Amino acid sequence: MSTFLRYFLLILAAASFVYPFVWMLSASLSSESELGNLTLWPVGFTWANYVTVFSKIPLGRAFVNSVLVAVITTGLVLISGAMTGYALARLQFRGRNLIFYLIIFTMTLPFQITLIPNYITMVKLGWVDTYFALIVPFMLNSLSILLFRQAFMSLPQALIDAARLDGCGELRIIFQILFPNILPTVLTITILTFMGLWNEALWPLIVIRDEPTMTMPQLVTLFSVGGRADGQLTVKITAAVMLAIPIIILYLFFQRHFIRSMASSGLKD
Amino acid sequence: MSRVQLDHIAKAYGNGPRVIRDVNLDIQDKEFVVLVGPSGCGKSTLLRMIAGLEAITDGTLLIGDRRVNDVPPNERDIAMVFQNYALYPHMTVYENMAFGLKLRNMPKTEIKDRVTAAARLLEIENLLDRKPKDMSGGQRQRVAIGRAIVRNPQVFLFDEPLSNLDAKLRGQMRIELQKLHRDLQATMIYVTHDQIEAMTLGNRIVVLRNGDVQQFDTPITLYNQPVNRFVAGFIGTPPMNFLPGRLSGTGPLQFQSDQGAVTLDLSQSVHAPALASFRGHAVTLGIRAEHMSPVPVPGRSMPELTVQADAVEHTGNEALTYFHLDDQRFVARLPADLPLTFGQSFRLFWELDKCHFFDAETELAIR
Image (tube, rainbow over all chains, first blue to last red; front, side, top):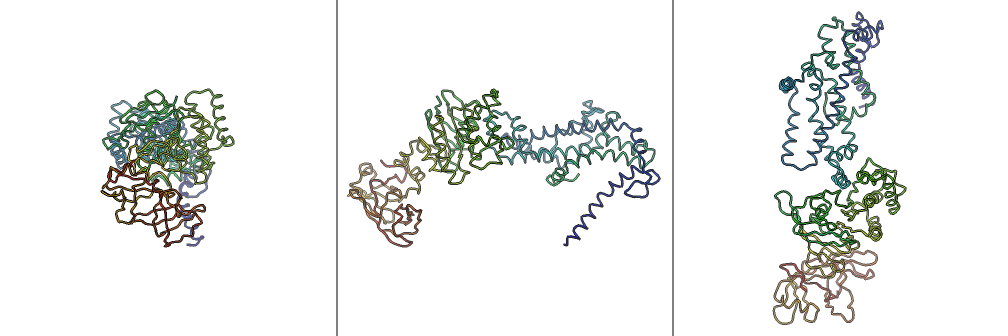
């Protein structure tokens, strides 16, 4: 295949992915009446849509909630995933493989199947409308366990032995000795978990009804479909832009790791 | 006092068979003991049991006068050097060496003094700020040894520390390890599968096979007086030559090989008294490559054989010459200037008194 054709196809593919985002950004800065133009440059440039969104919904608070939930949960996923992965990779105990296969099995279950049981659990625990409902169900993640287990298995046992002789306990071995040597895996898990949590709208819609506790995707979804946007498409699009901006900024900083994460996990969200 | 005593030590994984069986060793203070044996003989497992990295199934392990069976590795006052160095990749050389001391809450000044002293001893002072990935194998091995030295342990454990190095560097490091042992005056236990390493480093050597100690003695005793056929074949390069045969039942004491290629009159040899009680028994004759010569040594009993060279390996200072007796492959260490080529017949004189005889049934040496 000639270089020209290859570049042509790649540019075509890139444009088809990028176009909706650019148009969305352009539309959010255009007036409602110009929306049908589908141009890549704002027509009748205005900040009004952003002013409307901020005046109608507590987006700032929702942003803080989203950051809080995504950061804390990602941290917990890293801790619990590393500890479980280490146990499955390096500790000898009865039923170790059975537990591992059970964890893998849970990866095959769609989230919707566990939705109702999880909701009932939240109700019984009295966690509805609290951050616990947003954090606790996500703090143990089978994909992170799998990735950590594989990463820990790839490190030489002698590293762990040397740490034991130096006087390290198991936690110090995991977090001070092994963690720094599997940073690509840690970044992959961080990015995948953070993105998944950031974009999660369905679960918060079920367990949170109290507006000050809502996360951004939930608030934007409610705003868009709940009638508070007064049917104005540009305002809804603006809210969606606000939701996407943090991930886009993160992507710009961690572009290389994002790509590696997607490639190494073999997953597409 | 850093004596290490293994008293009826055994190891089994789960309900499986014992991989270490009833090992009894008394390693003296300041002694350099080498555990040697083929792959899977249990030497590394035994070392890891001494280190506390493997649980002891049975028996008692004493370091100094303290029973340490249930003492965690970091409290056994030992240090270990691993085959693949096991340096922490994300730490500098200094941090690697200082890490264990920091965990013991040692004052920073003392840590610095110890690391600097060890670095000076090993001539790695210029590497202290480097990370392991920026160093050669030999340099990493020095750092690994340095990490052990700074702890000033009662006992040093080495798990095949030179096997990842090339032959030249291995030779250098062997000499440095000997010097280190002299300088530190510490008890050292060293695992290797390389019998040359074992012979050159050890004050005493433990030969292991299938989890059993075959012989525990000085290198020269192992070489000259192996207790069984396994030790005789394992120690020495090239390995000892073996020839199965039988002793005569009556008449003059003779050894005859199974297929008749060799008949030796033993009646005047130093072996005669010991072999007398094995008359009529199947025995295996063993002879080392250097105990065969193209010319007889005056005054020694040296029977002559004519053999045909299968292959000749010239190493510069000698010619390792291969030939067959019965269906056994033999090798003789002959002078390099001997004009021998493939297929050529030549005379060979055996130093009869240097031969070894093993009971074919038990494989034990007959003395």
